[in-house]
Image (tube, rainbow, N blue to C red):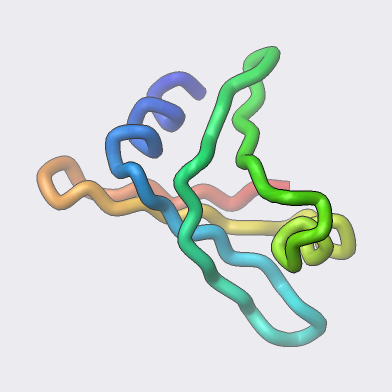
Length: 76
């Protein structure tokens, strides 16, 4: 988990994909933390991304670092 965290922090911006009804939604994020060996992203409780994750916790995160490659994570 630490390796993924370090990569996301190095990239500064990663992209979070959620589902809104039957439509995908992708937006840039920059906040990420590790707590008790779990990866956490931070968003406001009233934000659409948070509401979408509560309805459907299946999300995907993608980050690209031009020099080292990319990471794509499917989470739930």
